[in-house]
Image (cartoon, rainbow, N blue to C red; front, top):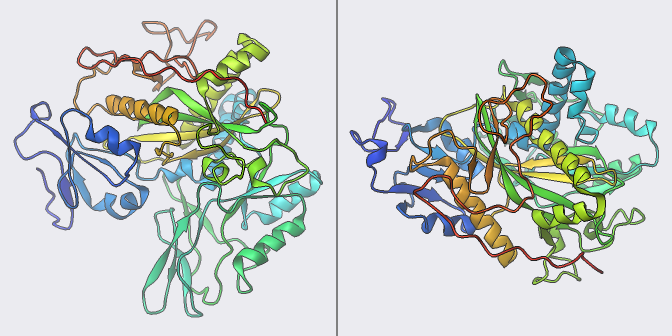
Length: 501
């Protein structure tokens, strides 16, 4: 195993003198005790290591990444499950900032028509620093509904009058510095926590008072200075002389999609999986399977305080009095696509799914120049997409750690196949040739350019007959393209009818 001269670094990988192909086993590590652990433990030739043991593959959480990545030496073959600054895409405020910047770049370089292809995210403002811009937009369209979502962190400890808030440099978490030198970290929210809808500015002030207390800085205070480092990624720092103030918890205010497409009178969104193996060059795979997550209560705008109507998160819906554990609140994407085709015809469905492909590619391109593309890293993203009544897809958010815990047997089968295929694409065993356009349920969507379904080098001059190599929501034949590993087809997804009340 190679080690740097700096003994503070931890080394992971092969023992000295061994080649990748000669490994008898692959040492893996993870702290997630869910479907992932089942898949890793049952993978032939893979051996679990614990504590401080050396590993070849680590499905880590983002907190480990932040604390250890810069101090860990990894051999050529070693892989970990996140890019160093994944938050450029997966934190709501950074995702929007990067998309806005990318849209402006496209408008300068390719014109307004090309830039319009990035109009797939609702109008969004970061709070509190863009409060005045938000108020200006709010007053242009009085009476419409907005949704507040936390993207930042909340205090896990107490500050005192001699503390100061500062940005820790990782752009992942605010920290609080005490005069004595100690601090406590601020942690992120998830699973629908802290989200609420509103139609009046007064509701924002009520939120401020209710969540932050009397000593919080005003929403109308000047925003903290924001800087952009040479790579284009974001760095925000507040001055160390803020002795008596703790900032309001960071939120985004986003225009609420008031006309969602409904099935059985219920709102839903889609969870789609995209696997990125490299950002430079961009190499991304789209998974064929995914699911629609339904709310448990019929949709209405007359009750914006009912989370069971407006939030589709499974963690929220499971607490509903009407929730049925065996029934669940999910449809597989194949079933969803078939339903839409029966209602609107195949051509409308093809156009919708093509628009979704555009979302995946453009969002990845928007962060391509700011993500640190380390060869040891890969990332399985969970995209959340909402469809409106006009069959227009909207990007809600991108998750760096999509839930791998199964809520039903069907969900378990989906996530098991997803993870097995992810490991095949990551290819620790060095089985792939590098020319594959499909591995299991994954289709190569982008390989430093669009990938065609047809064999050979596509003619991109006119793009007239070009068909992207994506098959989202189509039945996936469970067969790996290489002869070493094959799979039997999984149990077919349920084909029950439309959800009813």
